[in-house]
Length: 281
Ligand SMILES: [Zn+2]
Image: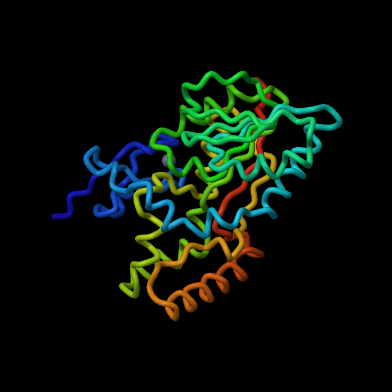
């Protein structure tokens, strides 16, 4: 009965053991990476409305604090010259539209599968793997994209090829080591509630990065990690399950408490990593 399956880790290629057959989760003990490996038949199980309904608050509440932090990291790279910046998977272009009036001389490009428009921002509709992008860029940023990828090594290799040698890459994604993810896993394991667990590990995210695995993929892709922070996003952006007003209030209060405690402990829900191309060996 105990037939254990394994799959190669998409980061370090070690054999990763199946952790949850129902959600198709695999765990790499070497780099502490958790990933979802869906059978081909299960890969298109959510439609467009999923993002509208389930992620409504997320899209309505951009994290301006994070935008400002990323801007502060870019300023030393920019100095006084106009830089070229690429936002990969820019979504609705919130970050670029926030930057535009602040840095009128920067050349801003956003690429996403979805269409976008702005008179002073270059928006490209397409896949970063194949789109005709005129690199190299001084700065490449990618917010909440790398958790959706099935193949991650080609993506990070592409980021390296798009970046100028002295450039800066910023990667932002969910933190599988965060307190809220740990609590969700513990609740599920203890049979208390599987709601948060199932929500966090639903199939729309395929890669669940640990502190170690996000750094591992960056180093293997030719980057030196300069700064790595695990932090939370604004509570207003937390998507709450539609389960009645009281349940929503309790859920929000609980998440608020976990966010309050986890931020100073470095156990926040997302990773933000700044890195530079490594010097050639
Ligand atoms: Zn691994």
